[in-house]
Image (cartoon, rainbow, N blue to C red; front, top):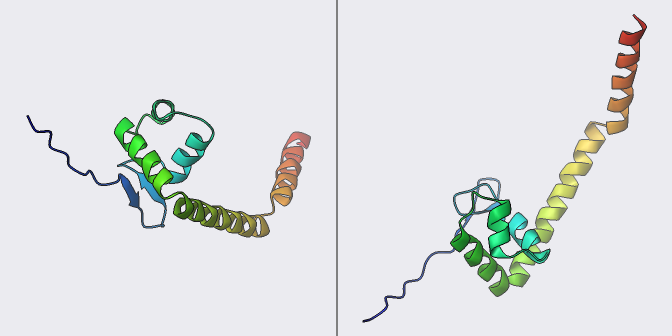
Length: 112
């Protein structure tokens, strides 16, 4: 009996925003790699993110281990983008100013 060995495509897709997703889910490559690097097994990752398939998580981990430098570069770029968006949002919408306005509004309603 011969065992047919077929290559399965890697279950990673890039969405319109350039974010790499695992399988047909909204779970990002960032999430799977971070959870794996925190010491979680593939089974634990599937437990935490039940929309994932175990085979897809194993394939994603294997891809990460085979292409670690490229994935780390991608993750660093994602962190830099997130930081830039965070700074832009904070400059446009000062969280302290918002808090002060909400507290003032609450105080004026209480005084009535």
